[in-house]
Image (cartoon, rainbow, N blue to C red; front, side, top):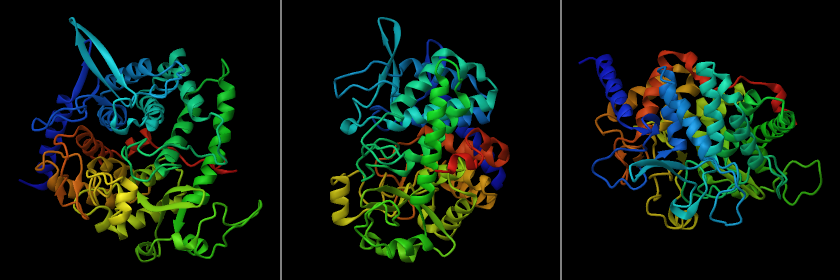
Length: 464
């Protein structure tokens, strides 16, 4: 069998598995379950997770199956939290559920939403409302159905999310402050504060909201607030999160304890916090956006989703985007290895692992969120490669994934420094691994499809 025939067979298998994962409510498809592994207890993997479904939705949209995406958007909007709550274990208004399931009681189907109250450590899904706006815009781009986004309930849903994200708070920065575990990395990993992934999704959601909101019914007030935050947020991330050798030298020579308006070391970062691995690992022509930034703290770890999405939505400049792709290419064995792609690099180990993760056995070094390899990231790597005109990177990554992912029965994640081991507690037939592969294949065959999730660079949004 030729490589092309093997690829076609894998695509067919993935499509069949994606179809089997569809969750139905009152006879209509409304989402996809997280995984369908017959060898493990279902737990909550038989629910539809909002962040998981986004990649399924991309696969459906790229293949022209739009009704399931429309129904998902309608269903999740109905589940959105609306009431203010004094109970600290209840969601605030605007929050989208982490997941939902269909339960049958006395022959009648009911939708049951989980806003994090059943999640490990009871962490709210901060990213879900951002992904929802981004997906709504992708649906409109794919179908031209702007009428859906302009419906009163959708306009109100967008505004509720913006109320949640743009609220006045105790902060000096335009970035969003979130707890540990509030997004794809949903366990304790030292990403509390202003993690890159949330800032990138926040920026993308604001740009999507700017396209979708109508100016009437006080929409103009929201549009003005969105425009202002886009400028300050875009400038902030580009100016302060960016790392390359030139920037690293600047940080190394920073003075500490500076006071006043016109200072270089605005966050009081100390040179001794630069990890030893970074000065050898960072290539001459490479760079990336740091994982986190706050008072006296810069997280120098490389986080894949934030950097790849920053390329796709033009939050990273064209020059920075090329440097990120240079880094991935030059450090291929570290960041891709035997399965695209590592969620973060490097892993935290030893005493740092005990302190940062709370001795989490699932997040032991080079596993799960602590340096594991996640096939879902294949579609983002492919889209970023197309956006930067580096398609050879996408072709290479897809070929690597095709060697193993089908034979390994579509795992959730892989373990070890180079991704050679199937994740110790990884689910098989993980839907977002399946959908991520399909989306990547569709995009490499039709590069114009990345427009569903990408934004063009707009200097207006990148000034302070």
